[in-house]
Image (cartoon, rainbow, N blue to C red; front, side, top):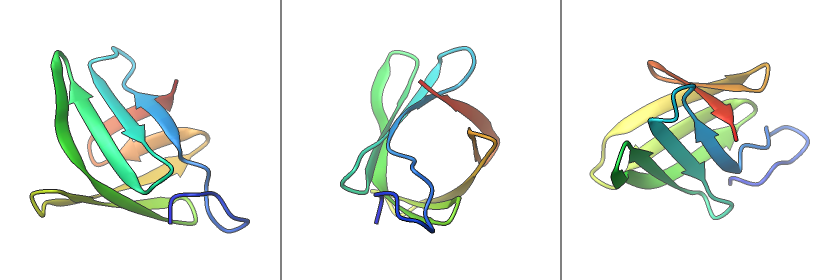
Amino acid sequence: MAKATEDTADVVGMWVTADGYIRQELRSDGRYDEARGNRRSAYTGRYTVTGSHIDYVDDTGFTATGDIRDSVLYHEHLVLYRE
């Protein structure tokens, strides 16, 4: 479930790297769409939120994780800020 509850961080919205190269949209339906540079929908898939932790499953089956700390999303090696 992507929507915020008392125990779940509100993650829905656009998250971007400081240089704007990577843009990750976390949608309210539990899907994400990640653009890289001019490449739209470079990665798409679904995500779930537990507390401030995010688990991603790409449509190809690849998995990744992320954590929100101090309103910053740390997604594997990326640092993203809410737009």
